[in-house]
Image 1 (cartoon, rainbow, N blue to C red):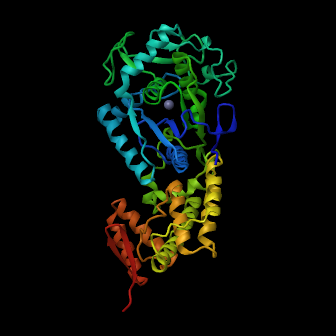
Image 2: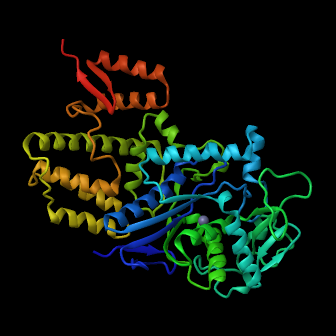
Image 3: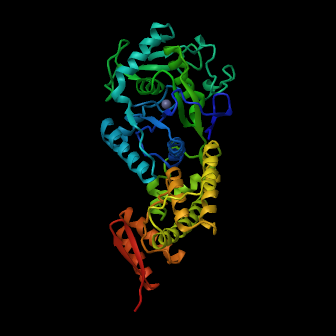
Length: 471
Ligand SMILES: [Zn+2]
């Protein structure tokens, strides 16, 4: 069955045709590690995880590269403002290298908790400085650069198709009214390829280059590192919708100018997670992290379930109420599935691989239609509630669907907990979350509360067992 994807380049759904049959090269723009990632960032990474899982599900061999931006970049897309890492360094008293390491680890832990399959390779920008310099040299040799007092810039007026991804209205851009940009820039849309270190004061991260000591601009790392591992042209490039007008537009300008070939065939972008006040962002100070959700008694997979319920190209308005709904649905789902798994164990041969094709086709059709996860969840619930299927058939289908959904539906997490009322399970999960957040006092209070309601929780290696107190 064909995979249909919505291509930002051209703004339409297209059949996915890989460069090499059976293989897919995928590049996704990764985190900037000068701070924590909020759950809005993870909505994008989650959409990319689903894309990759759908490719796997269809039998593709996927090479996935994700960058980690650990170079101290500037706060705004306009190549002006404070350096993010140096700013973090001043705030925390750590070196920029320590900061990058610290937040990278947090990102990796959160990604794991959300069941994101790791890429084939994470590429840290600081480990590919030479590749970035080589690509700037290539642009320099072709005459697309110029030097100002603060850096080396790409002259976008030399490209006739600059801005094709975003359908940019170059004349209408109002960058200048919002942010003061270098007066030496020839065009509003020109961007830095290399920035010079300030004359006074040493930067913690700086490198020698043919143009002088400094550091690479943000966009060049993705062009250089994708080329190294995926080649001049590859299949799919992804990111958040905010990457379209500047970051991805500039990646295309650099890569296609240097190689003379198309950069990526399919461009896919995830819509924002929003709050009542607008787009979730780091600049607002306090923001929601995976850990915040856990502290409120939710699991990372409750959040994953929430995200699956809205198509990746639609904005998702976050509230605690909809997360609560997702949690309730997830709890019910897990209980139903546990019942199915227990029945299957009792009544059927575990080696029975029977899988009703009709149900599987419905699921495949949903996920292959530009990752229609809300529809895929509907197919899953349909299987769970279907009286005509045997438990083993249901179990096999659910295990199979879980390869895409990534909700741990193929695991017995709470052995023997199927007959526990939902309100008791809720307290149990709050206690698990409290323990994860190392709030042992709260965990003990919840254990006592459960006891007073007649339920005992026994901690096990792979989860907990919940038992009714019978005396
Ligand atoms: Zn990028």
